[in-house]
Length: 129
Image 1 (cartoon, rainbow, N blue to C red):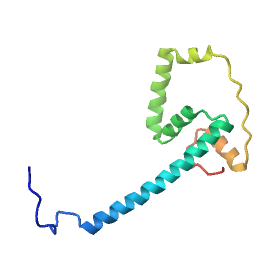
Image 2: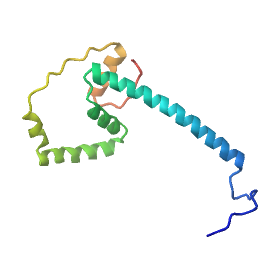
Image 3: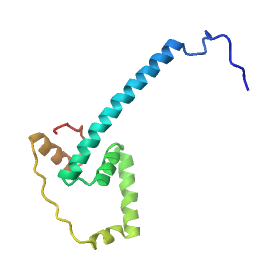
Image 4: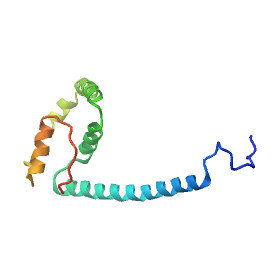
């Protein structure tokens, strides 16, 4: 095992002040990220409780939304094939029908976002809550 170097001013080592500054910045970022994630979790929990959001479907849709068009196209090609081979849609169709209420759109921004989703366009999410 290599011995620690006594010369701590080597040009090959990141200076201590820079390391500590990066560590503090990372710690601040962690706190801010945790706060944002908590806010999102609360909004999702509210939507599950009050707006009929299916948590797992929404989570999967968010992951898919991050994919490039080519990857998304390949995913759906394979996913649809797997659903057919495994008989998943037939199995789902055999379940009692769920009553799905029409969503009440609260603003023109939401109506526009829904119409864009229907056309399959990728868009920036607006905080309309």
